[in-house]
Picture 1 (tube, rainbow, N blue to C red):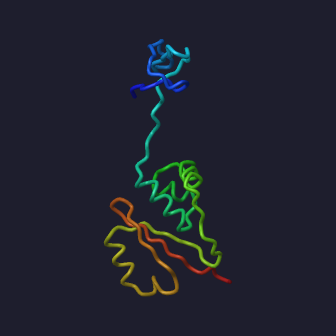
Picture 2: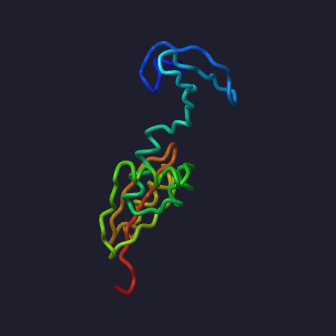
Picture 3: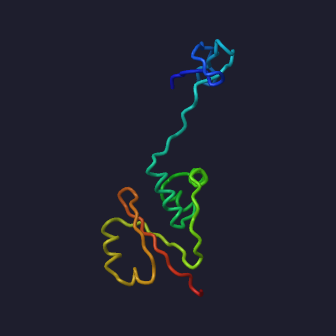
Length: 140
């Protein structure tokens, strides 16, 4: 990552000043501030961020989303906080989900008892599909 200016005074005059933990260190000629090249973190594709937030809104827990997408539950929690996502409150329904391929999904919808009395959403997960179904809690 090329350095453009000093993070302290925004000057463009700086010199190399050694290496620390494998990262180049610089010294600003104007303010004598020492700094290093910013570390690039692991970047997660926006597709997974959108999919994780969508699944969160559908009622899945952080750990369930982690198992499905392979993204840390802590990352998902941080995205929910960052984008200020709030789930709608509806305690009469709870989601259940299944991971199906295209053929299994077609068979699922041919049986009418699978879709009566509940809401269903289908979302793509790579080469498979996730079917999320809301059912009323028993005994309410």
